[in-house]
Amino acid sequence: MANSRSVFFLTFLFFSHLAAYSQIVIECPTDAVNIGVQHSSEYKIQAEQSLIGLQIAKNSITPFLPQFTIDFSNSDAIKKYTTDTRSKSFQVGLKQLIFNGGKTILNYQMQQISARQQYEKYENNLKEYSVSVINSYFNYLTTISQLEAQKDLLNNAQEEYKIMKAEFKYGLILESDLLEYEIRIMNHTDNLKKTERQLQSQLRAFKYLLGLTPDVICNISYTDNFDIADEFYLDPYSDFLWNLTDIKNLELKQYKQSLELSKKQLKYQKALYIPSIYFETNFAVSGVHYPLTEPSISLKFNIAFDSNPFLPLNYSNTLGLEDNRVNKIAHSANTTLTAQPTYFANQKLQDLSIVESINNLKLKKQSLSEQLFELIAAHDDCIDSIEIITKSLELYEKKLTVAKEEIAKGEKKRIDYLKDLEDYTSERINLESAKNSLYNSWYQLELLTNIPLGALKDVCKNQK
Image 1 (cartoon, rainbow, N blue to C red):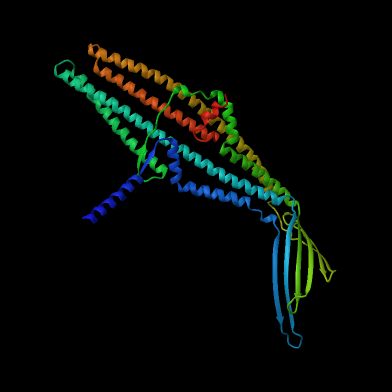
Image 2 (cartoon, rainbow, N blue to C red):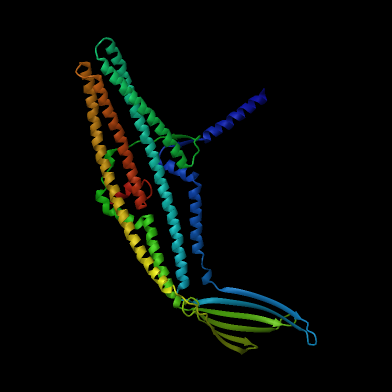
């Protein structure tokens, strides 16, 4: 008996743990974003890839470092009718780039730019994802508010319908009024069911966006401390917000870096005519038996026009030292001539790539400018709408109070009162939609200006 109780208790704890684990509480937009990022393997991989790319670009200094060579040989040859030969040698060499017209530095800088582009692309993708999560979060809450308003409307309508049925029973109202009222209740019931289905669909989409399975229970809430007095128009901050966008926008940064990369590539292309100069030295020890007792040193300067498309000439000057004296002086030059029929076309393409980058940057700035001012206008329109709708709701509430009195006096039909309730409910829904649009406009502006989510309002206030 005791064992069965223990098993039951452990089983209960296990399933309680699972139940607790499968419930997620979301009380604000930041909670939703954090959960989404935590469960997103895609952005974790992107982050790791871009950070590794930055590290690789930073450590790509191999072309600046000397190259070392180590060579060992042991040769024994037995020849018929002649003396056997034996030779052994050990050689250590060093090769160092001295000068190449800055091509190595340019190549290193281009790798840095490309790595930064990839990292900022990841940052922009992550921020776009965060904003989409926030939009989905507020859309879901707006639908909840719509559902609550529709439920209130339907409850009020059903209460009035009960009274109308009693009035019809005693011949106080026409049957046509009662039937019209029934039709309207049926329509509102249908609308309520549609909103409930829409809410479930939004919840599934929201869970999918956060990387959660459909069976996870999400307790989604939001403390609405909205106060229209805390809001302000953004039109006076247009220039300030554009300056932020011009400096900090992540997409625009990528376009600027593309232009910088094109300029570096053109500069690198022109530097191909500049030779690369290398210094090489070799220290060798040779002999017949160990220990090896015949040292020698060679010094070599190599001038290579290996990147020159027309005359890839290589010239070297070698000096050999042995037994404390110069025993070798050598000069060599070689080239391989190859036809370059596409050279000038490629050069023109390189020039056009800069023109294209400049044009793309200009077009992107224009696009962002239009997008910014549209968002500012939409934001300010939302403030006006909220103020007007709030005043309208106050008037509707007074109208409903008066209508109740008129119904009691027999001066107003209940079907007309229902129409007033419908208009009031519609305004309630409009208010929540306007508030949702206002929230979303802030987060869209924060995406555009690359300000931390939730911080732009304070940033603007600090400009006063």
